[in-house]
Length: 393
Image (cartoon, rainbow, N blue to C red; front, top):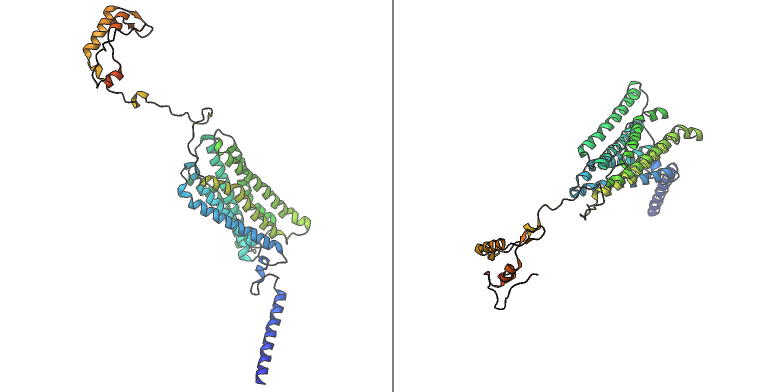
């Protein structure tokens, strides 16, 4: 009897736990855990699929940016060309900015509070300014490469990008100080127009990068024009995306009657799409160009006027070919007697070769060849018994 009562109490305890769990599950979104706070429900709510899809796309982009950075750092010691090494710093900054864009998109999926809103307002313009200032510095670099074949230093390009980003840092800090600290307004209370106007400097950077990237298509060094095409596409798509999210954020939500509800999803989609544009059209081609080994030296193209003329051989062939010792030339008496006899005998001139000895004299003098001297052991051989003279004409 006691055992039956004990089993009955255990059964009642299990039913109470299941009943409490079912009541808790009724208030928890489907797909989320029991202990997950309500503010993070959009990350796993199966009824609101946009958060899960956007989270997956942003996570894939962040992983891609990290892998590209690791590949670039591992291949850095093997990049020998100075022109390619100068873009490594800019590429790392672009990857860092893209990683920040993907990470910031998660703050627009969860429910906001004061800290989340401060992060949104402070990092939005700064991350975009970092990416677009790198594009602007890349346009300056490609313009130098296409026209002169030389690139500015990597430290100069990195400092230029960071200096341009610092301006947006000051703008965002002043906006937060004036609205949150001085006026005492909540960080989440701001108008969409104010948010857009605070990013005006970012839009100016993007337009300047687009204008400068077009100059990278004109020059005599065609090797770098492919990089210029990728840069122009990146800037052009970024301008189109920027115009799309600004128009939807300011006017589209009000026209559809979804003004406060779709503001955060629209900004999150803008962050993720900009990050993938930077990866696909700029970071991946530039990393591939950097890690690609230099082609082997080939024969110079004499019809390509952009290449410097090949260096001609300055030494003569006589310096490379050893001249054998000619022992018969040591017989000075023989050579002088022959020369004097030729002068006494007269002769005629044969073009530019000077006076030529007469035929009777040359036909009666035995003149051994170099091969005959070598075969005779280095001494001048005597005329054979059957030699009657060498008639040249």
